[in-house]
Length: 291
Image (cartoon, rainbow, N blue to C red; front, side):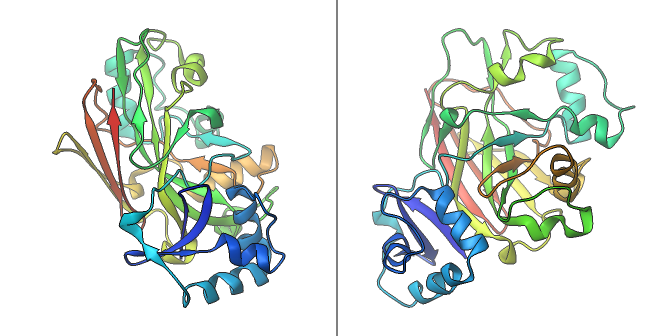
């Protein structure tokens, strides 16, 4: 099932080239309030069987053409966006060459995951959105990542049970200033990656039944029509299960929280006028402009 957020902050279900309105049905059944947020919709679908039953019924009802709606970020108000750092060996190597900083080859997985950082919700944009390059920035890269969306409230979960706490997956673009403040200064991530428009999400959330194994997914990126990244999530150092185990051992993960899993190698400098297009297998594709 693909859950989207569209037009005037409406929740919908994408099936083929059609969008089925979900929000009104949830409100009518008392499963969502008027003026709901997507975090609340995710909470209901993940934790109330009646809400998922309602969603399945909606799929047999009225729909509009996907091409006629304006897709928004599938969630704009997550309680937290936890972002993994340097989670692919090849990306570690390219960042060490480009920006300096400590080598991480000797770190244990938990030591590496202790470098998780938070991204502000104010940085979120959706499909077709525009990344705005800050005037202060001399070098800005894109990063394309698989992002897990938490469903049930999660604390102290084991790795074998971790995926039971995933509601679904989406694409996350983690846009990053490299210069200034990037060279040899890893504690600046929150600022360098926190500018407005620096977190792009979409095109929708795919429920975990449609992507049962997050470590068997291909990532592809085009920049101005040229293929610049092909990667596979099997190359992650720490997988989604390990991320959920680690984070839930430290804090409570809540419905709608996001865990974005780090970028593979192949990041590239952005310039005004660029056009990004990315695809993650089993999820879909989305494009972004740069100015």
